[in-house]
Image (tube, rainbow, N blue to C red; front, side, top):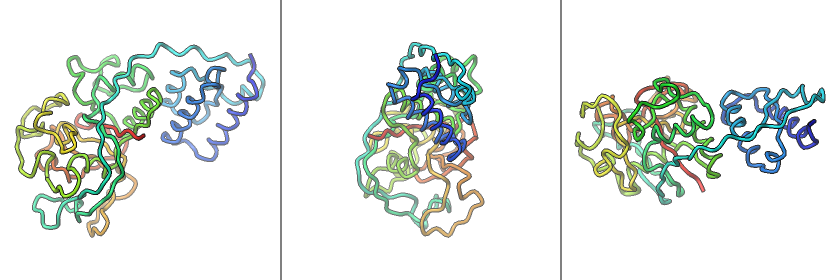
Length: 326
């Protein structure tokens, strides 16, 4: 069959989009999602230009039966094969989320707090609308559904695309910010819900609680080494996300927000309003990570502690949790 009018129109639309936006994984996935949601076009066999799409976008499209071809083939009027039937869907292990109610909270550390880093002050009051956040960090099993459905690059320590045996309920690690973002986009596509990474403020409110809470740790002000997986515990690796559920729980019920793995947020690393602190890392070069990890001491497990990494970095102590909108 040759492409129909709707297919040519869509191909031109994609070409124009490439020219105006350029290759950016966030916008590119947003486009793919928009195409996937148009069920009529998918049923008829969508033909989309492959120019400018990265491998993750190609994988997402292929999984859902969308042909990615060079626009030149369409312009020459060459016969275009219809997309193959999508493979049988692998069951999705959707992360459990909990509601964080609207309202204000204290973000950051108080001036004069002996444990506070200079990037944590001044403490300031923020108001956030309601949102849902993952009760736990995303696990290996949940991330594996994404890898199996899309063929996306697995974490480097996985063998033959599978996570290490017995670690299905451990948080996924060795994932970059971009990997975490790709997972959120895929999860949004297959569930019809909107998932993304939490902002730094959303993460901190979920970990501390609303006003008037000023606690240092999800459980309170005092450090207790047996409550979470940090360097003091001596594990030297990740632990199941539920292992400390009874004792490492925030006022809203979020679990494992202190220790185990640093968690990516969607926020750029910037100074707080009114801060005089300067850093070469401020700006749109590093994303904020929160929560500390098994490799760090208790200082990093405080609710206010701010870490940062370039978005492409992968580490054996770096994972993420999700936020669901709507």
